[in-house]
Picture (cartoon, rainbow, N blue to C red):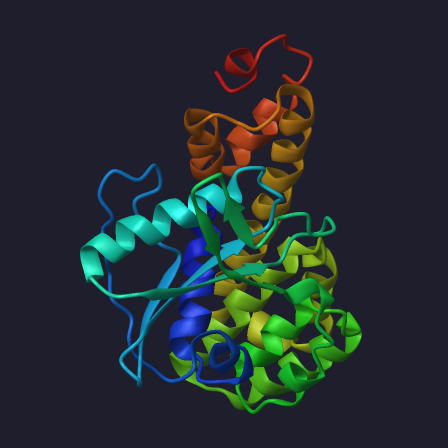
Length: 266
């Protein structure tokens, strides 16, 4: 995941004890921070120690990576070596494209399975009906009518106070960037929640979240174009995209006629 996603999703799950958290993890008692040895991406998206003593690993993905099944096997072996017990694995898919990732890695001598939950194909009614604001926000990425989600989330944000209100407002506008709705959410904040936008603390936090949402959409669009031209991106290119500022992404988008990936991302 890009860094902005990583921070947002971890915040949502570590705050939440709602419907989606229960579906993925059950009852969580700890979020271990485990560094994996000799893995290309040495940190799992989310690793939870559950109330029954088991461990659950969730990867959140927006793209149909061709070797994702092998990456999950890679993660499993590395994490099992560190933790020493079996780890349940789940892919939470939130991509715009129809899901094409398989939930199994197979070779002549090896078979490794994991669960896939396609959030974009979920109904979302239970998430929207939840008392947990993180659940309500996740509903924006399901099949639920976005207008219903915005109404519920805005009502919930108004009822929150202090740091919790800031977190909920900021994460919601970042999530809106995933489905290209950051402009609409920004408009609604300015018209329906103008008092929050004028708040000296919340206003800047919300505007920063909106910029992150736009950067997320630009990054995903640029990555899709590059992958169409050059195939799956090498590690160095994926890392540069994940770390790029909005200004850098804009500059790269003007170089798309260049002949090589190196020239575009120079």
